[in-house]
Image (tube, rainbow, N blue to C red; front, side):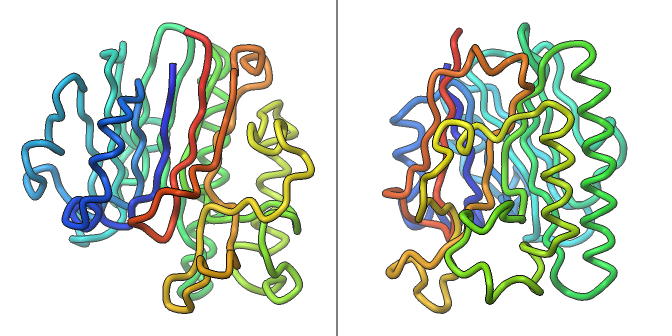
Length: 254
């Protein structure tokens, strides 16, 4: 089973640029998209209900063209839920699905920029999300993926020293990933490639940072450690363009 996760930075935008067609040609079993910036009725038919996939969307309630997540699955989930702990999710940040062997959560975690209030919102979101998956993990293993909006270690961004005081690399944000790992979840990429450098998933478009590979690894697959034997491979698909993020993949045993 193959899962692709990608922050598309606007689903309609990548479609207009013909940058999404490869994904359905590649035909992964599950597709998790973040920052869709759209409601289902704004999408063309081929994105509303792609042939061969069940489609689920979670959109921002109040602010149009903001945030949003989408999940496409060849296998119909046992249950689909939205938001942390199935509660109100006004920014459309979580689509969760239960399958026979695991839970999968597709998440667009908040960015801590924009002032103290948004950083506090991000940290509270982190806290509530970890508590939620801990409850799920008691029933069956958890996979969660998406744009976490934080680089964990210095190896995970090109310029760590320059970003020590910037959101996305603040000690308090990075500590949350420490907390996730301490709860027996695994950052699959770093588990597989512990010393890989220059392995990034996001680049600032305004400064043409991708041309120089001045990036950040802020997109992740995490799995419950007990599920790790089911993981076959993972990859950063940095040859795919169309967004300021590139996709990441996870292959697991059926």
